[in-house]
Image 1: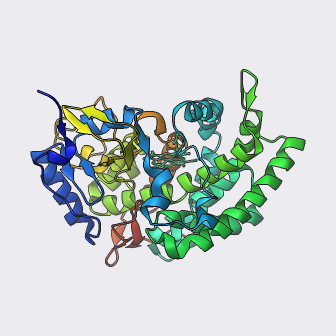
Image 2 (image 1 turned 180 degrees about the horizontal axis):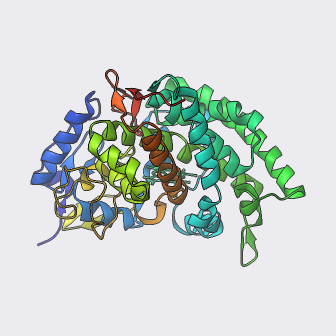
Image 3 (image 1 turned 135 degrees about the vertical axis):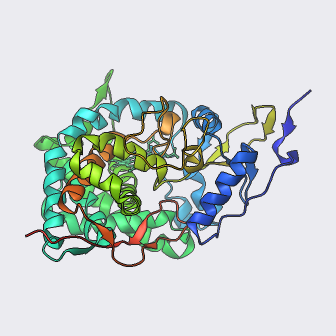
Length: 407
Ligand code: HEM
């Protein structure tokens, strides 16, 4: 028997695009995943089981949907469409392989480890500002500011530029807010300023190398091949787009989860060596990036289903992270959980697997035990409000907590 075309599959339709309640959305996806590995959604198909999410993310014929954001948002004005540049997030094939080969070493765990003392300093400094009060909005006071100095230190940007970076990061990230028609002029202006700033930083590092990521990227060379200035600028933007809102929201999701599980928080405060496992378990249980998008670059047959070229799929990492065939009792949040042998999928899988995973892990592994040690009796001090569910990166907007003041 030949393959059945995806369009003809007898599968449920999930319409969660504008579902305002995250828990309803997650519960619907998980309930569907008990019945089927694939469901229809308004743009294409949701992929729900762990093995299929991994298999499809590892299949290079499925291309990143990043390059389609403008098209999918109905942007046709050449003033904007002509500016579209290939980034590491949207590159495919040989172009992507070359970029990953050139930049890979600069993002190694060892490179991330260089920043651990600085990460601790930043977290302690942020806690210092709220500790005497015994009250904080973790999302606003800790998570929001945390990644900016780290990314600046990583790149070698001086402290006086942190504010500008924070603004550029916020504006460039509007690309994922689902309001592109309105936001494009702001995004474009931020990109232009950031480009100009980065070109200045590159020129400075070329004449005076330092111990930072930018210097490593400038020096990166494989068989005589090097990154061009335009590619260096693109990488800096990718680091800002990929490395700020993700980390801050993941930290917020983690603390919100711990606030619901005080015994786990206490355990982390007493045993900071559990930080590594705690990060994997919080990302499995409650990831800030819940899914991604791919489209078929050609006709693709998978599991006897034919996906015609152009078909859009949304691999749901969040649902896969609760797949009971991989994670025993997936609904239980337990930072002493034995590793499942297969990783949590919040960093993705395949060729676009998060380039900043080592850095993000280090940031979370340093922040969580410090927060647990300095706020061991942390408890919610009002309702948590969440970012809109439709936004790609998810986390708390406000996370009010109280704890014993520390002087
Ligand atoms: C907890 C924090 C983070 C999460 C949950 C996260 C998640 C992800 C995911 C899911 C992808 C793959 C997207 C896809 O396949 O469509 C990705 C890619 C990427 N991430 Fe992260 N990320 C985090 C932190 C960071 C940091 C700190 C950086 C940079 C310093 C970074 C830089 C990147 C880049 C450059 C890519 C594109 C890689 C490629 O396409 O080859 N991320 N990230």
